[in-house]
Each structure stands twice: as structure tokens, then as C-alpha cells.
Image (cartoon, rainbow, N blue to C red; front, top):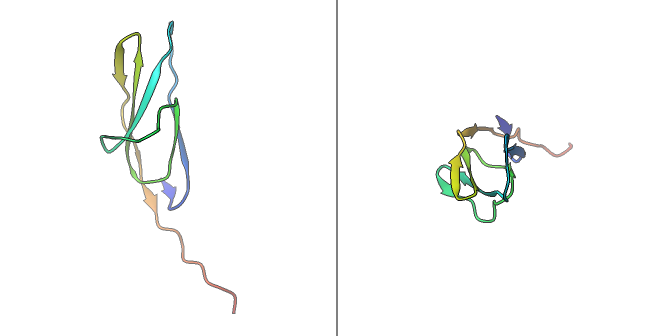
Amino acid sequence: EIAEGSVRQLVVTLSGTTAGTPTYQWFRDGVAIAGATLNSYNATLAGSYTVAVTLNGITVTSQAAVITTTPSAPSFGTV
């Protein structure tokens, strides 16, 4: 859970033999996030995030990381 307007960094790491160059695509609620093609993504919105990693023609999709947000407390000017 993150406060509204905050950032949660999501990171995927590969283990085992990783000959070749992996590619990444992050998804929020099943929809590809434009430009989110690194091994990490800074989530700022609530949702269910997954990443598809392709290596040597094989694609594996992660389990979902569910991010929820809590509303920010209102700010008041000084009196």
C-alpha cells in the first residue's frame, strides 16, 4: 500500500543461466504500460502489476504485485 501520489518501485530479477538479452514489458490490470520496458517500474497508481520477460524466444509472466493507495491527507494553509 502506498500513499496517493507516492511511488513504489517494482523490480524483476532473473536467476539461473541467462545467456542472451532479456526484454521486459510491464502491465497494469492486464494492459501493457507504454514505454515500461526495463527490469524495473515505478508504480504510482493502484492496480495489479505484472511483467512479461522474454529470453531466447521464451516468455514468462510474473505473478501479480497488487498496489493499493490510500488518500493523502488534505493540506491546509496557515491561519
